[in-house]
Image (cartoon, rainbow, N blue to C red; front, side, top):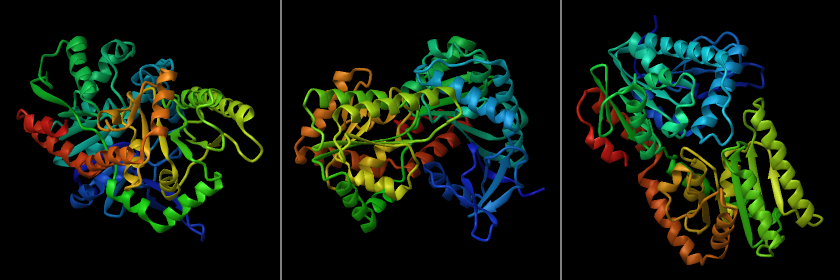
Length: 476
């Protein structure tokens, strides 16, 4: 058997992409992403293993090493992909945890697939983890893994981090196998959330649903203490700053402005095409400002990048139709030949092109109806250097608790969104620079590496059974 690891990450996806070389040879390369950036140093230092799905269906590739990380693929069949991933994870849990913006769908066969896939991930972790190893389980697709893993390997230190919101008791209680999900999470020594309120929801739920006693953020379970805490995730701030300062990116940003006709104001949205992101409401607010004459085509242009997402899930197909219809309506009513009011781009972009868009945009609109964090808001701020720029941000994005110098709005209130956008457009350059500087200072000291370090330190303390006040203080 291969050597066991003292540090194991368990996530739905592996941090690798399969590529075909010009010679037709299949190879793996690490995929860019905040999580792998943050955990790479820890994984290489401890000869760590990352367990996850490699993409595709059928048999998984054999385990292999890549850039100092042991990669341990877990297989998914086409049926499991449909039921565990598209079904239970993305049509049941995702909408429920996002305030039921869309109605969650509940199906028994989805739950059964979710259970069996979670068991497979737990089994893989139990096999590769060394005695007393640290195992960090990631996100909503794997909420049953901590308890399953604890049963298999009670010697392990187990952390869980939820990247999306955690709902209030009233919403969570809709879930048909609610007690099993809660017990799944309680298998961890430390359960981390983006927001303090989410951690409080979790602790209260343990009391309400299972009658468990708690003190502060510690829940007593089976003679153990399970700690809940807030650990807001972040970005690789220095990398984003470096990217934005690259002369090629700067030149591309100037090109983008010229291609858009050198307008006075470029308003940018960059989102996955998801019903939680509030894209449609943002477009309507822009349309009403054009209709009111407060913004004028030519002076102001909106660029909306909507990255394709979960195209096989029905909610997403209908959202795409609605968004494209709204874009067509705005351009039909207000555009001129060669001068559209909205440039809509339903495609994926490289990090360089996104950085150029951030540098080019005068106003960034991030208006989700509900979001665990929203790293696009942080990326925009990191890319602005000392050039000002304005961030219009939904109060319901996790980022709003940290980015208080943005122009906050309630995305459910069209007049509030219009008001925030107009204040951002009209703000004095000196005020915009001041706001940006404060947010940039925060991002430099609260980057993704600091997030991972804070969580793992808090997990060490929680697993030792001490009262981890210091970790809670660090994570607020």
